[in-house]
Amino acid sequence: MKILLTTTSFQDTPGEHHNVLEDSGYEVVKARGPLTEQQLFDLLKEHKGFDGLLNGDDAITAKFIDACLAGEPKLKVIAKYGIGLDSIDVEHATKNKIPVLFTPGVNDVTVAEQAIGMMIAIAKDFYPHMRDVKNGQWNRRTGMELFGKTIGIVGLGRIGKQIALRCNSFGMKAIAYDPYFDEKFAKEHNVVRREINELLKEADMVTLHTGANEQTIGMINKNSLALMKDGAILIDTARGTLIVEEDVAEACKSGKLRGYAGDVLVHEPIQTPHIFQDIDNIIITPHISSRTNESVQRQGVRAAKNIVNFLEGNDDYIQANKF
Ligand SMILES: NC(=O)c1ccc[n+]([C@@H]2O[C@H](COP(=O)([O-])OP(=O)(O)OC[C@H]3O[C@@H](n4cnc5c(N)ncnc54)[C@H](O)[C@@H]3O)[C@@H](O)[C@H]2O)c1
Image (cartoon, rainbow, N blue to C red; front, side, top):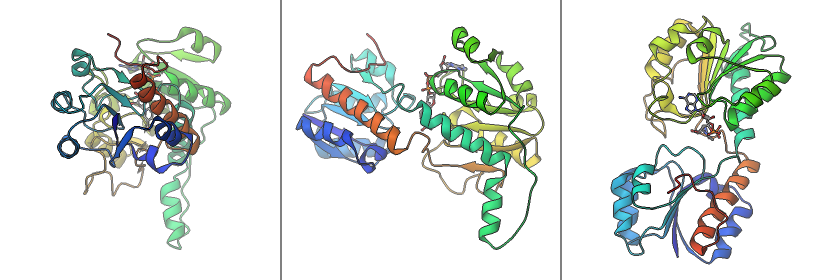
């Protein structure tokens, strides 16, 4: 069996997940993603075909899937290292009876910790303070407490729920929007249901935890920002495409938003010059929310077991596209 492995956090973090692949005895072709469609085609041309893909956020398009199906060996499975499937043409994979495996429930704590960290960083102006002190300057700005504030959670799924639990301990009020709202969890953990526009109007901090789909792409734009409180904080650790970057940049420059913290961009890696680069109250990290030693190993083991088990005919794997 031959696997194409493209995720860099899997490759760069030591741990048990490497053993799962090694023990399989499969040939593993390594590349450093996220890869464009063209880069994937180049690899396919060089290696003729793959039984499986163990991928991160590479452009697994319909065209590439078709080419892999014509490869030697022929593609049998796509195993996403992660939960967001927006970079894979899942519909096309399903049409061709190619299982798309994924790793839900392994990184929710780690991503929630990142979002909370980012919220505090914006509330206390960490970035300009740290930069100034490193430059020998002692400029002190006045921050904002989290206690007593309202957090608006968009997407009360696995990560959104971990945010709610943590915000309870900060003495914050949690409100959430989710079309598939978990009433039981909300009741047990003091989360109040809101429609999206109500949430935007009421929250002091808005944090995005939904996948990218037709309903959510571009959901934070000029119009939705106008509904938000003056001086609100916006956090996006989910997908860059959920926001219109130009509109968020404008809102941060004008002071409409106190600040924006994102772990994701519309185009990754960053393409420079980028509109966010010179705005002090915008901080961006390079898609590392789920990248901790603990989380990478959980996610890596799950992803590696998914692909190996599937190819071995063992049914311990998690499939996103049931058919
Ligand atoms: N930055 C990172 O490293 C990183 C890591 C993990 C996940 N993510 C992103 O975070 C997202 C959430 O992850 P999760 O594990 O909590 O997923 P999840 O599937 O458990 O939760 C997503 C929630 O969004 C809800 N939802 C669907 N449509 C919605 C809409 N229109 N508006 C609001 N909510 C909607 C769903 O009902 C679900 O409850 C993923 O889809 C992924 O894109 C990013």
